[in-house]
Length: 98
Image 1 (cartoon, rainbow, N blue to C red):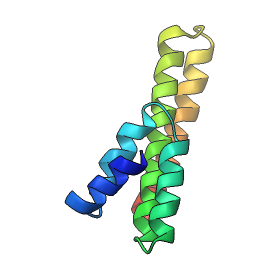
Image 2: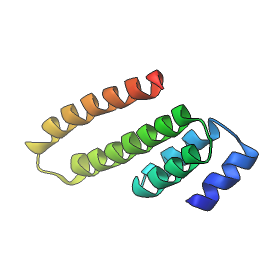
Image 3: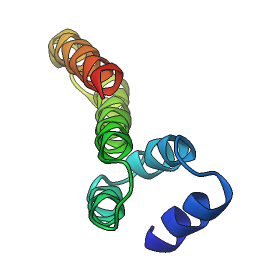
């Protein structure tokens, strides 16, 4: 992930990191979080780092929700869908505020 972040910094600076964060969030949030912390520590825009971490977390949450909706018990699905919707709304507000 560190290599991908460096490549995006070089070729698609700024908001290109949001795409990397969304792709990373499909499987894990830890790697992009560490990469964005390093990006901000090295002088990168902290708002972009925060937004990228929020996007990765939202993507990861949506993937997990999808798994529950596909594989979970019928009584669990609506509760998880509601919780995921509220979490996604909070994440979207965090990205917009950054």
